[in-house]
Image (cartoon, rainbow, N blue to C red):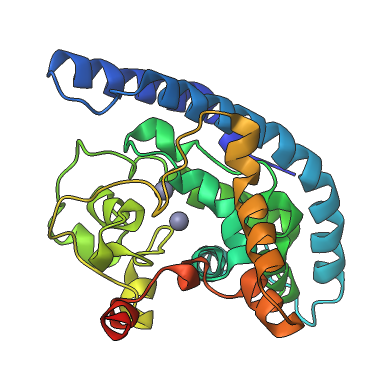
Length: 281
Ligand SMILES: [Zn+2]
Ligand SMILES: [Zn+2]
């Protein structure tokens, strides 16, 4: 399948190097943790390799979904691409929201969030194994009648867009903030400040967050990372610790429903609610 992300590698590398140099010259600390930066880059390279492997399987699933679609959009009509842009971006919003709000999917996506830095290298810090399940969210795009190659192209550009928003260099962008996902909106998404948790899931358009009640504007400096800091640079552990924690939690729970909750409910469910603490007193 066409993967625009692969062709972007040299551009991404130059932009990361440029941001790191700028940060160094200005005395800023955007790249204070060098091991973290190289870990991000290694995770990114390997996610392309694993993505290609899983892509072989998902290709057949997407082809099958497209073959049974009741209607097939014409590739040579401009309005097909406009509709596909919105459909793909909405599918990304749903994929991303579920990736935060259901632990099974968070176990993959946590990789992207476990860095405590926020710079362009974090953009390429991606899960190796998310290709196992992410097709669940995208097969419906083919069922709606978009050919897999068209989806791959559009989705690739969607992911490319998301690269430049991983920066502290760019402040708020005026009216652009109303419609599009921006560095400011995405800093909120990576923040673990209480008011920022589970917010701003957008890919390209922030309108979905505004429509579905998950939008928050950046008002305070975000603290980056995950609620329980990982403190590891081991790429395999970064990709698997979520599973280990989930299975440990399942062992502690009695009964099938409580175990299932460990798999599908929010990964935040074990966090003590402020209410519970008050009751405990
Ligand atoms: Zn996320
Ligand atoms: Zn991100």
